Image (tube, rainbow, N blue to C red):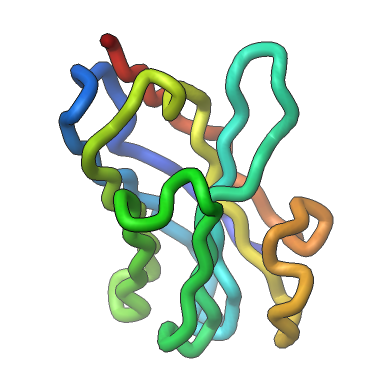
Length: 126
């Protein structure tokens, strides 16, 4: 069982930056593929970024490529999402997710993930 707790959300002006953190419980954190999803009001949850259990492979949604960076610190059982050049359309609740699967193909699908955090609100003002 893995328990995920996000933090770091808040209100920021367009063009600004935020770093989200996701702290995970459990001894096998390093074996999980981790990801960030987001959900804006009235919209479906969408994939943002993922990092493979090895930490050497990452993937991003086209809408955030070049602006967001996902990273992990297995010693701290924490995954991060560094968000730069934020836009109003980035406004959403951001969720951390963990997958026990060793595969990678389905990483952009919410169903690939076994555990979810409660979410943290990110609001970008124009």
